Length: 391
Image (cartoon, rainbow, N blue to C red):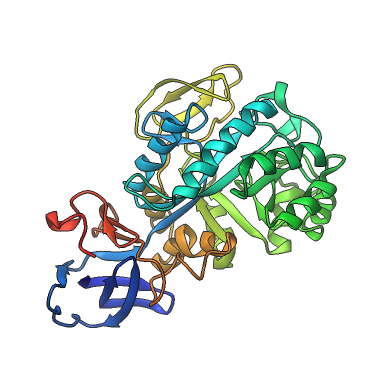
């Protein structure tokens, strides 16, 4: 049991300054305004001295981190998730780049194993995101062209079966022949179809959203650009009101477009699209078997200079969003509340409210992470050197 007190608590109803949160076991049991109650017998009182207390981040799109590529091995996948947990990501959707189908089925098996394990000291995998193989060659970005293929229901069914229920999102170019059939099959399985890596016109993308696509993979990137006579898939996504991923690393998208998407706050979903180089420094890496060079934190394919994911972490994405002018509650909702809703997990996580899981992030005045509470347990020492297991 623990009471976290003296914090600026970000709740669905606004910021409680000061505010407090009571945690029992793995759940939030009470949230209040003011300095907070005195601790009960056996209850740890953690004074946060004006720090921000926010819901744990949920990353819908991550390929690696800390020098670990999720596609390399089950151990690397787990290590990458653990790296991002230290930056406040308490739930992770593991993203897999296009690869031969047998390789993808193997990787989906690793995700299924990690997801079945539930929350643990190394992180919490909530499922898989297949970023391919049903993508448009013209907008493949860093995706391996040799493994792209047209949407095929039988191939989709093979991949979904390998995931054992852990497949949560699949990116598809909606203009490709067979796309709508795969979107329908995914919907029947409860899998979210996302529009991405697409050369679709506005009308083609609009048809995809009408057919059931409910998410856009890294809006503006890996898609036909906007034009005043052919608005393309990005404007179609905004018109359709679907959730929109955005890589807010200062490289992929201009801050003005971040503000444009956030004009309707519930549609903005901050993601990292992080590769293994996140947190590992500049150097030479691989993505989908292709060489990647990272310079000044910017990852690009050696072959053609295409952007190859990012070196972003979710805490940095939030800091950049606030610096770009987003209200702090909008920035944190985009990193936690909105992705929880996309995944159908809003009843479990993504907000600070009684009855939800105690996935919390403590941040200082500069929004640097100083403590992560996942399923009611501090990861590491916690703020002020607290015990790693206060609950």
